[in-house]
Length: 113
Image 1 (cartoon, rainbow, N blue to C red):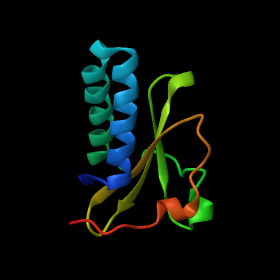
Image 2: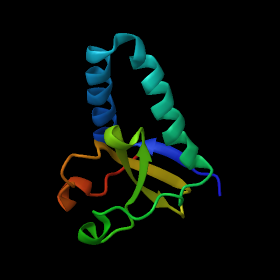
Image 3: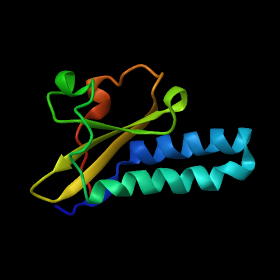
Image 4: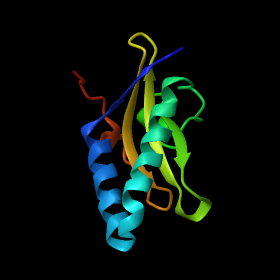
């Protein structure tokens, strides 16, 4: 099933903050990091269900999935939902793996255009 990938404002903010952090520490790696992240996000167009349910799914009472991006100690968790009816993958957040889980209210559904 081919899907359209849509980034919530919260995911865009997360990506921008992480990008700024990467550029601050390794300016020449920023663009490469962002390209790799986008490749990972848009890979969900073809296989949207490949990520397992996220730790936050039970508390949110929704099928929030998690896809890892990066290397073990520096991996980021891409939190997303699949809308079968609309054939859409909504990226909710991009978080460092060491960061505390998101409160269910931080994963509230949003309206997309």
